Length: 78
Image (cartoon, rainbow, N blue to C red):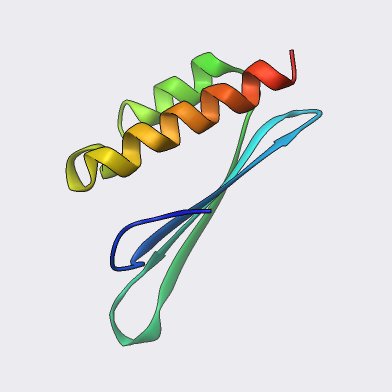
């Protein structure tokens, strides 16, 4: 699991037979959470999502780790 330093955003990656499953959880004020589950069938769709993910500006180191681990998951299931 990947997480920001304060734990406000967590990302779980799991390689499946169908592609890369990603669950992104963002904790918000008053105990609310926004949970997104996405399935990426190929590296191109994953990279397209990464290109617009706000985390790239908020936590560059975590974002780079996300991209590396996502690409690694696709490489294993080729």
